[in-house]
Amino acid sequence: MIEWQSDPQRFTATEAANGPTGGVFTGTVDRFAVTAPDGSVIGTAHTIAYALESELRRPIAFVFNGGPGVSSVWLHLGGVGPFRVALPDAPDEGMMPPYALEENAGSLLAAADLVFIDPVRTGLGRVEAGAAPELVSAAVDGAEADAAHVGELIAAWLRRHDRVGDEVYLVGESYGTVRASLLATRFLAGDHAIAVSGIALLGQAVNAQETTQRPGNVIGYVAAVPFLAVTARYHGKGAHAGLTVAELAERAHRWAITSYAPALLQGDLLDAETEARIAGELSGFVGLSEAEVRARRLRINKEEFRRALLPGRTLGLTDARYTLPQPDPGFPEPELEPTGAYLDPAYTALIQRHLSEGLGVRSDIPYLLAAPGVHERWDYQERRSLETFGGSPSPSPFAVFDYGANLRAWLRSNRDARLFIGTGHYDSLTTVGAAHNLLEQNALPRDRVTFCTYEAGHMMYSDRTEATRLGADLRAFIAGGAA
Image (tube, rainbow, N blue to C red; front, side):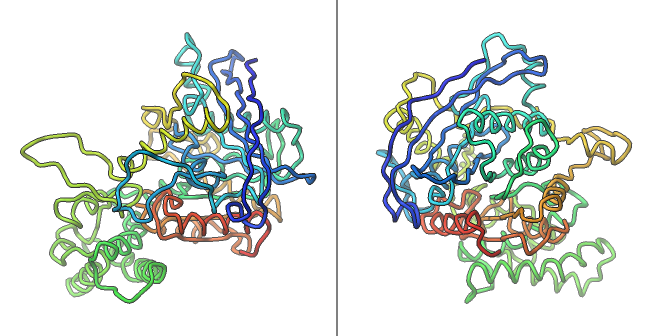
């Protein structure tokens, strides 16, 4: 067994940076072995934890991003950790070295001790030299394997730090919301029985199958409308002035499910008068001309929209407020994703610096923000769903991805468990409309669900004001605040 732990490093937080409770806290880095189904060690994974010095048994929030194959650096140094990357106040201000960390007013440390999880192949985690690729893939490459991998890390951390039986929360972002959903039920049924008190889904992807835009999937286009509307208005397009971002998103959502969805469901049976009316109304929301809307048969693809809204510029995938000029067709060049091009260098530099200067980890191993190629080989199928259509595995037209069933089962099994759903308005990947769909189509107990939206993107905490709001909302959630 490979076990390793850094010497705890002490920090002092101000009250303003950590909500109602400042004080001294420690930061610790742990390394854990990752094993294959046959018991052989195939690699290592790491956690970075912060614990406020207290005589009380405090809740623990296990925090992870998604990908799949992505480290926790974004939530760690951007979202809910005690420090955050100091970003400009506006997306168009630009960002170049030198970079700096600042205390995070959105930190969850006042409400819970924090454990950031970097699965194998991310962060400082690595695959062992000589490990058979098929064993590695069987151990970690898929929804089921990943839940087992991360679940074992959580259970091992609790045992190592004598925290078994303490109150546990899961905070997942993007694919991490799928992971959190699976973990909730597996913890109740597996060898590591843990009752999860609350789950926070940030930029949720639990219903990605239902809301993905593809031919014939009406819901994918309906769910996109709030994102399209607020993004168009942000960039000076559309016809809905005088509303707040939240008001515009809500108006777009109501229109989409009451007027737009019935029209799309009629397909070629839609009469000309209704088609003209819907085209005009949709044009007013999305900022494209009626002719463009009708040419797309009333279906606005988000990827096309990112390149069509502002001629000559491409909107960010994870935060549509960011833009970059499109390449000159006469001079072919790689097309960069605007948000990543803006943020990634700062996070890469500062996590490495924080590990060495803040947490005392001396290593020449680079911290990996993400492992390449993981998504392409990932098995998204959940074994439980294979039984739905007689065991038809993926890829198949009968494959079922009902990750939401795990949330229903978890909430039903524990009457005190609570769910938090937080989404950025300018996120084109996991939209506010998709979050509404998750809540409205999965029979979740509304009195135990907190639903929040933020005027930012997929990583809503990249905006300093919204990071503070998110932190306050999550602290209230962990403290048992009303939904």
